[in-house]
Length: 152
Image (cartoon, rainbow, N blue to C red):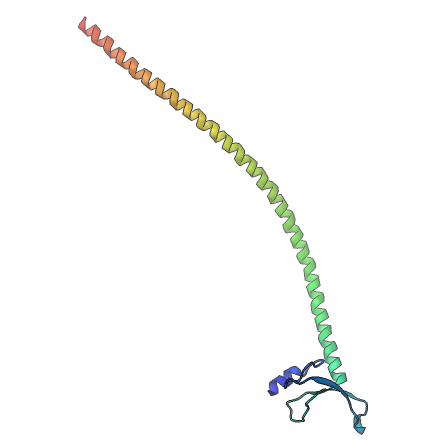
């Protein structure tokens, strides 16, 4: 429990490690009349409860907030660099979109040409079959003529 007291004893206190509420107390002791303290509502001087000078807590909190501001300033600066990178990526993306659109057009043109070539190949195949049949018919006729010539 002592580690919890030490860890919680920084800045403006919200709760005591014992779970009790923290209150602001103004000292009435002659040695430190008017001094403010953050004190556990159930304070006992046993080391397990919080009692901290108000000025010290405010100084701690101010120091913590200054560190946060410095950290956030650094983050803001890095955001500027990130914005620049995002802009570059956005421009590259737009360029890629244009390239993709052009490639889509080229693919469509190639697809059309392939269909035309397929039609031409089919037509040539048909003509080849006709010529092949005609060639066989001519070969048969030539063979028949040769047979007739042999018989003569």
